Length: 478
Image (cartoon, rainbow, N blue to C red; front, side):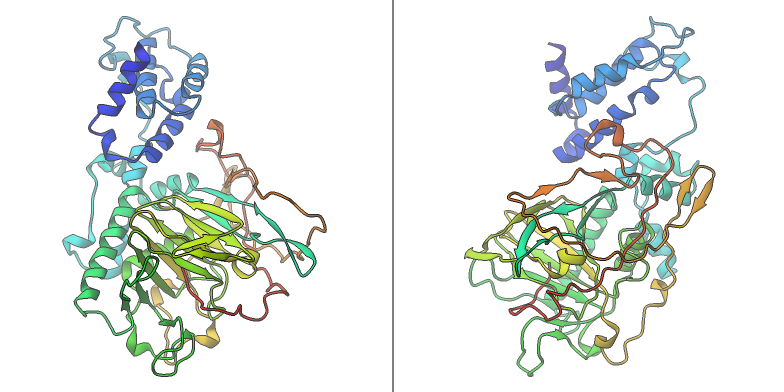
């Protein structure tokens, strides 16, 4: 009976209706992990009241009741607390000695540092450049911007070590080696800001207020055709155009707009939070706007762009397919070896075999989606007269902490590629790990406020011997 009431309470709460089920699941798992800390020195009734509230966030989470009960058993109740306090509110003794403010999951989801960074970048005080959130105002009065950023940085998770062996020229090769999927890079508030900005770009592009090759909206004459694109920094020509220009980066800066300030803020975040290495700062990007049924056919990104590069997903989750031999089975339909789900707000990094051996494609999406792919041009392919953005130079990644000392992640030496001679019938995704090597599929893997024990360095991998020549066929980008 109590459980039914909890579920009803959670499903009808106006606050929770503002979030997607996936976001609520993350919140419930996060608070469940932190329950012993959150209920420390609280009375029994307040502790169980808090646990009920956490349970109501996402009552359908697997094993949530069991995990909550286990965590409640570890709670130490203060002897000075009155067990007869009013359960509908926190008792007075619970308010004494409250620890200094820390960012909650809700605050992290609503944290929007982009407004402040855009303000500094543009050096003006236009209302559109500054966005504040009342939920985190108390936190911001206590924690500095650097402290808030570091707390969020420690909560970033990364899933890597994707595995799919396929036989190429008689050798079994892990074709998705080098792929990484990062979570919690952009908060919900920051995602809304980015989507709103893309929508405004789309509108001014339709009005012809962007340069000739910045905005493109092909006619949608069949399913899978007609996605809209917005390019900045350089213009990539997908096929031979009417002027005779071959596929690749056009040697003409006059037809393309420069990188917007908001996208440069995103790039700085990607470098500072160790998503991309400081040796490969993006200087171009392409925005893809998918309507229902739009897709991207199988391709390998042109080598006019160096590796690694990354794509950020917004609005809706979708699959991206990888395989050494992807097949077209219909309009917007493809057959591939490995479908990898791209959650909203996630960042997929493509490097190594995942970028150069395996092709990838995005099947027809079921609902509207936006992706932004950030890439760095090969120096020899940059348009004449190109000048690097001053505010994208000298970006330093955040340091990891080990004990009481801070250490910069080392640049590891390039390891020689080792290929297995065995064959694997079915692909598997190795266990998910966070930045400290801990599993992220268990409650203990949530942010614990600890230190990073094993910093992760970036490896620049050599071009694979099977991909020295560009792959035939039309090139594209997600």
